[in-house]
Image 1 (cartoon, rainbow, N blue to C red):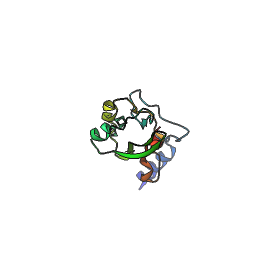
Image 2 (image 1 turned 180 degrees about the vertical axis):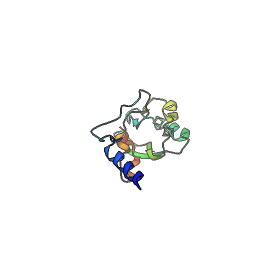
Image 3 (image 1 turned 180 degrees about the horizontal axis):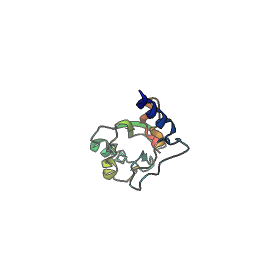
Image 4 (image 1 turned 120 degrees about the horizontal axis):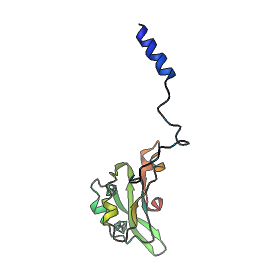
Length: 120
Ligand code: SF4
Ligand code: SF4
């Protein structure tokens, strides 16, 4: 009977494990892989990223640019493995893994599907 009370008292006096996110943030390692970034200006719509993606995370979708309608990658980041295969095969190197983590915070899974315009 006394043991649970002792454990409760210990838990109440123990230092918190969590941080006050987003004010406090963990530092990320140099090789951390975060949200993908796309440079729409240099993408050549080759779809190499879509073909190589092992988890079928990338879908080529239409977007309207100054040069007309072009196909560009849309990313379902909730399925991304952060393997960087898409970055490696991209001929103009316009699709790159960044360090942004803020985009992963959402209450709605649909927010994690990012259109090309949202990847800039
Ligand atoms: S990092 Fe890997 S899993 Fe994520 S979109 Fe690129 S190829 Fe697909
Ligand atoms: S992001 Fe790169 S690999 Fe993907 S369609 Fe554009 S140019 Fe091709």
